[in-house]
Structure formats: structure tokens, C-alpha cells
Image (cartoon, rainbow over all chains, first blue to last red; front, top):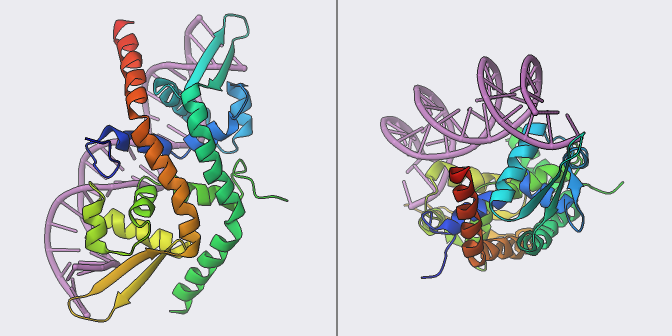
Length: 121
Length: 121
DNA sequence: CGGCATCCCAAGCGATACTG
DNA sequence: CAGTATCGCTTGGGATGCCG
């Protein structure tokens, strides 16, 4: 019995939901190849709130995709980095982010056409 | 000025949100290489409601990723397929779905450890 | 069969205040 | 700096009913 994302009962669906998260892809994109601190991540990812960043990081951490390292100093110093598992996923999501950047123009044209059609109709 | 998904003002962020949608990846995965009817899609994607399927398809259609072809017959016959743009995105999301299926085991182990740790602590 | 409109509960998420 | 807890608005999304 193979895992199957089309089966809502299959755990892989939950994995997909994780990836489909609004912020996960950006966090993994940002962590590509380097560790970042909480505040650095927040600055890197425009528009994310502190709450959502923490929440996303916790979720990714629980899934073994992100590793959290806390240095016992004052002021607190916490670093986040990709685990090997996360490193295997990151390139895929990076590709998706890149695709979004590359095909932005075509999509905006489509949206304009759709909007114009709706307005005209 | 390059499109940049880290910029919340940049349109590519909206594109990413589209991709990050809970159902989009599954729809694009299901439409790989063939056209499907509304009911076929609904059957293929376990757990999706009629409302969400329509909503997802409309969104993908507006963005030029999915093409909708309606045959004027009774009973109605509507087919959905990938546009060239959609075909360029589909492999990326298929990879993500595959990754979810392949690494399900590792992630469940991580979750169990995290759960056990939380329960023990 | 395909799909839109409505209702309504639940989850998402930002803002804020507080802790170490 | 990093993180938790709470509140309240906003959105998501299922269920249902009606129409071509």
C-alpha cells in the first residue's frame, strides 16, 4: 500500500498541507543554505507576523524539517536551520517560488483578461 | 527590479499563495497529462467538496493555469485541462506531492518524537 | 451534470500585553 | 531577543437548496 496524496486519510495529505501552508515555502526558501535567527527571518520574510513565524517554525520543527538551536545567553539567541530532510524539500519549494517570480507576468496578463472579461460581461 | 516573493507587495507573493492553496497542488497533480470532468476531479481528489473544487478551478482558470471547456450538450459536459503555463507548473507540484508520499515515514517519526517529548515534558 | 447563492460554524491570523 | 497567551475580527469551507 503506497502513500497517496489523493487519499484524505493518508498521512501524506497532512504533509502536503504542511507544504501548502502560506508561509512554509517562504521560510524554507529563506533558510536555504544558512541558519537564521528569529528576528532575521521575520525581517527576511516581508509581511509575516511574529506569531505566524513562530507557529510555522514550530510546525516545521515538529516535522523534522527545521532544526532549532538555542544558545543560553542573554539576550537570548536562537538559530533556525534546515535538517537534511528539510534540505531535501527546500529545492522543490525554491523551484516553486522561482516559478512564481518568473511567470508573474503571464499570470497577471491572464488575471487582467479574466477581470476585463468579467467587467465587460 | 526583479519579482521577489519575499516582498509582500510583489505580485509573485500572490502567485505563491495560489500555489500554497490547500487544493491547487492536488488539482494540478490530478490534471497531469489529461483532461478531467468536474465529477471526475471530485472523485479523484478525496475529501474535496464541490464548492472548493469549483473555487479552486475558477482561481486556476483566472490565472491561466487551467483551461475550462464547456460542451453545449445535455446533460452538461465540462472538461478541465492544463494550459501550457499550467503544464510548466504541474511537474514542480507533482514533485512536492511525491516528496510528501516518499518522506511520510520520516516525518511521522519526527512527529511521534515531538509528541512523546511534549507528553513526557 | 455542473455550478451558484446562502447560512453558519470553525479556524486563521493580527494586535496586544506579558514573561524570562 | 524570543516566546506565550488572550481577544476579536476576518476568512475558510462544509451543508444545503435552487437553477441551467
